[in-house]
Amino acid sequence: MTRKFLILLLLIFASNSLLFAEGLNGFVESNFSPRVSENPFFKNDDYVSAESRLQLSYQHFGEIGETFFKMDFINDQVKDTTIIELREANIKFSPFEFMDVKAGRQILTWGVGDLVFVNDIFPKDWNSFFSGRGVEYLKAPNDAVKFSFFNNFANLDFVFIPTFEADRLPETERFSYWNGQSLSNSSLTIKKPEKTFGNQEYSFRLSKRLFNYKTSLYYYRGFWKTPKGQTATFTGFYPELDVYGASFRGQLLGGIFAGEFGYYNSREDKNGDNAFVENSSYRYLVNFEKEIVADLTGNIQYYSEIIKNFDENTQAKGREEFRYLVTTRLTKRLFYETLTLSFFAFYSPSEKDFYLRPEATYGFSDNLKLSVLGSIFGGKESFTMFGQNEDNSNVSLRLRYSF
Image (cartoon, rainbow, N blue to C red; front, side, top):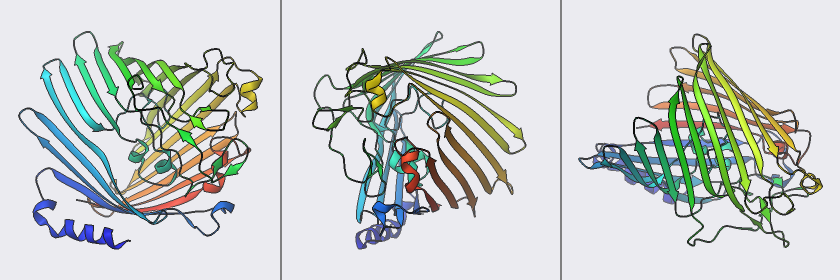
């Protein structure tokens, strides 16, 4: 832990008036994620993650509306740096009875998938997800304005994002990856859309309850969240994208049944004849969740991608026309819910790769919790999503004290 971070902790905890201020809370956490397989690119680095984190959050309800603030202070020993990240800072108010407005930095989540996303085109932090941080860090923040309209017929959400926010890809200081030709840990050259008028992002969701199911229609206009395009000089970029989708969720056979569909219209490769830009595709998922016995819940999910205008150019990029993914989740609570055991598995029959996330969390008290999480990857080929991470497998040990 660096001297700057220790001083910061001492200052915060020395100020009792700040720590116990009305509406202020947070946590202190240590996370260590040693590798469990040998990675030739990190022979002298035994950790995917080694960090200490302090989070402070503040919420205030006023006569006009509410304000919310959340900030993380991270001492990252892998990158030997101290980071301050503003996760959320927003205001929420209701100018009319039928309308809510939320403006500022916020976490946005849509859709019905379980750790699989179709119409949720908001940024993800895959670096956090693969390195053993809490699952809440899978969602990266956005600077956005969200308008919500309510009436007896349906509800409408509209999100305006003035500045494009890409997915946070696994960092090369921690992970090796498939660069299109071989495994590597060299940084890619990537160009993001310019911050100019016309490069904003827009998301719409129209929701209504039909036959005891919550149904939604979606539309997104913006860019692919990962660099799905490449120039002739091998510079990655984020092509333009439209997404049209729908979802449903409701009770069935004593459980929860849900489904989601999305058409990804790759606007810079509408005919699928541009070898340097991702093709359009159809994506869908269905899942079912039910309590199997007391304190044991199970979930099974099926997800598929179908590439439109599939040809030899797409196949040359190592892609298959159909990609299937099956996931399952089991969660068991023991000892008056002080111990939670969970297991989440991703398996792709088409790409023959997998990602396993077993986790055990024990609460010593309401404030102190210890978690052990495995991130185990494997696959037949090194260019598939999970197969390329086989040598990045790790086990995370997290100790969190909340206040």
